[in-house]
Amino acid sequence: MIRIATAVLALVLAAGLVGCTDDAAQPNISGTPAPPEQPGPPPVFSLQYSSVTLSRGGCFGTCPVYTVTIDGTGHVSWEGQYYVAVEGAAEADVDVAAYTDLLRAFIAARYLEAEEAYTQRPALLVRSDGTCEMGYTTMVDGSTAALTLRMGLYAKSVSLVYGAPQELQALCAMVDAAANTAPWVDGESR
Picture 1 (cartoon, helix red, strand yellow):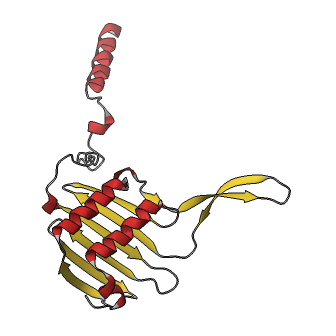
Picture 2 (tube, rainbow, N blue to C red; picture 1 turned 180 degrees about the vertical axis):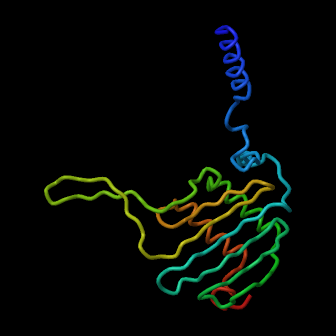
Picture 3 (tube, helix red, strand yellow; picture 1 turned 60 degrees about the vertical axis):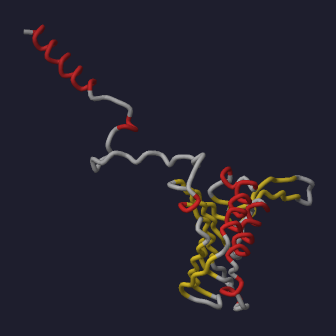
């Protein structure tokens, strides 16, 4: 009798172990498979399925708030929200060569290697007694920006709040220039 109970227990344990696999391959609680990790940038992609988006956020003052996207066909989409000359949607077209130059600038600025967010910068506090303390400073008020680069199914977004490298900050100005946002922001003629 003990041998039968031991054999049954061994079968139950073995049956339980058969179903054990890597958790990543298992469905989540809802029963749907977990989504695959976002792939890295593709080595080859169609220009028409790419885009660059700049979103400028507000501040405690009158910083312009808008989103502008340039796609691989040269189409520019604008959505002005606050403190801009053109609120709402607007569209334009730019030369595709200007867009490809912008893509090259993103690659040259090492955008694909950038952190997801820049919210603080290193600082050194020097006390009157001669001691020093390393720390970080953060911004309380100021305009924020986010850049998104899409290449096929791959997308990377970087939030530029405070302390971002100059190369990434310069990309924001390049997107504005390539999309010719000045008339929509300031009301200058197009």
